[in-house]
Length: 66
Image 1 (cartoon, rainbow, N blue to C red):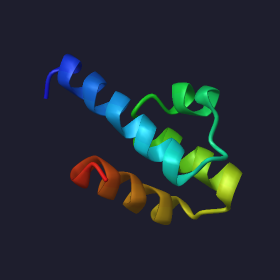
Image 2: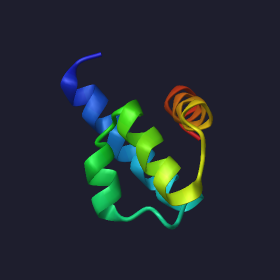
Image 3: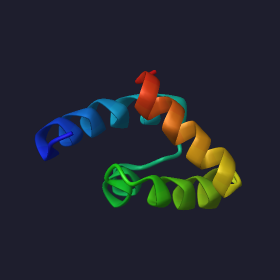
Image 4: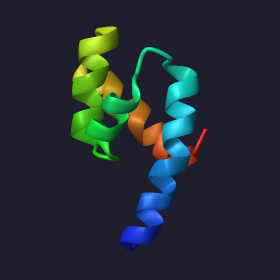
């Protein structure tokens, strides 16, 4: 996947993530910037999710885009 496609997909996912987890700020999403490890860290901080739970959710969102 080239960088333009990855960036576009991340932009789409940001909206989905903000709808699902309203406590995440734009700064949080900028920090995550499409990185699975960052997503799991932020989810642990904000929602108390385990690393495994957060990574599974990130993969579901990325793969299904919903």
